[in-house]
Image 1 (tube, rainbow, N blue to C red):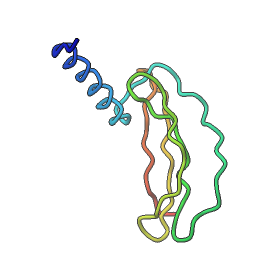
Image 2 (image 1 turned 45 degrees about the vertical axis):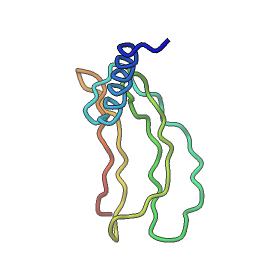
Image 3 (image 1 turned 180 degrees about the horizontal axis):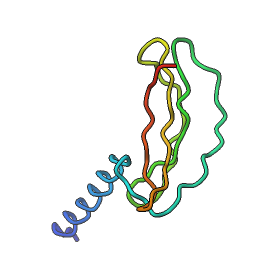
Image 4 (image 1 turned 45 degrees about the horizontal axis):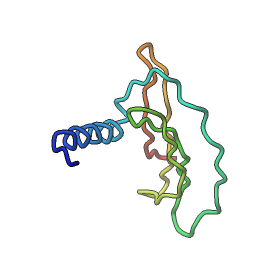
Length: 102
C-alpha cells in the first residue's frame, strides 16, 4: 500500500546520504580508512593523459572505493597530487587531490 509520508521520509533519507557523499572534503570520520587497493595501471591512452589513482571516499555511512582512471591534464606540465586522509584529534579528514605544476 502506498504511504505518502513513508515515501517522503525515505526520499529525504536518501537525499541526506547523497548530500553527505558529495562533500567528503568536510567529513570528519572516526573510523580509519582502509589501506588503498592495489590497482593495475593500464597503458596510457594517446594524448596528454595522466593516471589519477583510486581512493577511499566516505559516503556518510561507510568507505567506498573510487577506482583510478586516466584524466586529461588541464595544462602542459600539470601533475596530479592525489588526495589523502589525515588523522586529526576530531577524526579522519579528507584532503582532496589537485593539479600542480611538475
